[in-house]
Image (tube, rainbow, N blue to C red):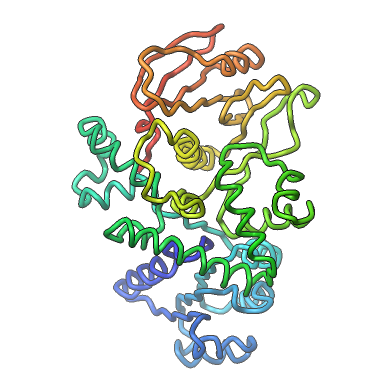
Length: 393
């Protein structure tokens, strides 16, 4: 299991262990941030001796937290797995570089990776409403539009890190977000990745925070940060592999007419993004939060794309026609435009019309704050969908 630092991995492992214990299963738990536990991972022989001592060789579930602390963790686990011992290993770590790159290679065909995300909006609303409407949130949101909007604004401000969600005052939430970023710099970038230019990385992070949903300009970022272009691209890779940002590639069918090289950037957690700019808790008007709202819809569409096993893209031509998102299905494509304004009539945006005229999809969406209507453009059904309709429990 991989995910950003303090997103709840250890808590989830402990909960799973408790459920297994309650079911009568034998479990062991190791945390490599704990010196006494880490001592058992000096080599495979010592670790296996510890397992044998505690389990008597009986079938057991073995939990290992913070595995990125172990040098060559992939080879370490591969050697143990290949012994066909009666153990199931549940492993987690904060940095995906070790887990997704080295462990991915070493454990090919031997593992399944789960990525733990920050608390979703549906989870956040369930928590804030005392779980009274769990399983029927769409109905609750339709009945309580004003309360739903207030919760949306809070979520767009502070994001979904568990400690932030459960914190009380806005000032406390801001302090926690700053602490989380400092911990990320110190433990993931400096300790794990040996990053030296943390100031330059922080500057780049803030510049990106101000440009969510924009096409990445590597040469411009190089000038602004004083870093070489290869270093800027390396820092992008670090930020993506440590779950800070996600890069959205372009959709194209004709590479000669459309921009195909640079991705767009979105943030995995909006609280972290807002904290970088000093805006967390200071945004109270949806009309001024267009790109933040678009980042929020990106999260909802990413989840849908993963469920349907289709790529998510954006579309932009050299003539500046642009559609925010495209679900790139094999037989058809679903363009999605996002509007963070209260609109009263189903007016199809010009760029969306351009996409429809070019690719003739069966359906297109315009995500709105409240309007729910339908329109037809050259045989394409255009659905105007309130954002709450995209929220899945």
